[in-house]
Image (cartoon, rainbow, N blue to C red; front, side, top):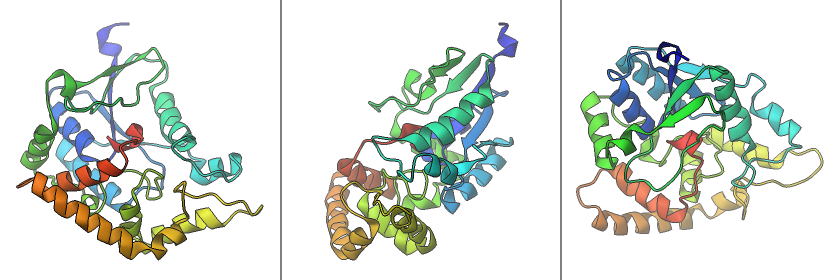
Length: 265
């Protein structure tokens, strides 16, 4: 296939790394297509940040979706909530819409993994989608991402004041302190997440966290907040003069570094 027919695509999550890569590629790949896989269960801060990013990019972000939505697939899976072991939400609401969007045309997919990361992002099994890693290939690390964000003027997403990454408001990879903060900042969304745990017609119990329900978690919120503050205090000594989000990421990564990288880059 001729090079002119190859599509250039890049997925956005509403997080700092993919935002920095979009800005980094803006003038380098002028025909790039930016897309966002919308589950319709995202934080309002994510949508607001994407609108700001569109202005800086001077280009519309294509919103991809499965029109049947999360609740449809929850019914299909018998009320079984997605988990780290069964990430059907990622497959049904993000990967499949992306692969339908690309179709059978050859495409280069730009992925926002940094040179200082030891992890693997989503790589399509479709042979027509070729992944490339500009940050890794050019040696860009976390400090470069912060620099790109700062120089652009867009700032960090508002949720970074209490949450380490983007993703659905009920993401099962959230840390316990992030559930507590969700209950304080978006009590309506927290209540919806609770209802997903409780409302099963056959009486079965499914939890977003493997070891406890959200109601049990929130009942001991004071202990969770206290432990979090102690961890933050210790980390600040290790990260002097670093942005708060970097300290926050370090504390929460210590608790759980197994993340869904389709959603959280």
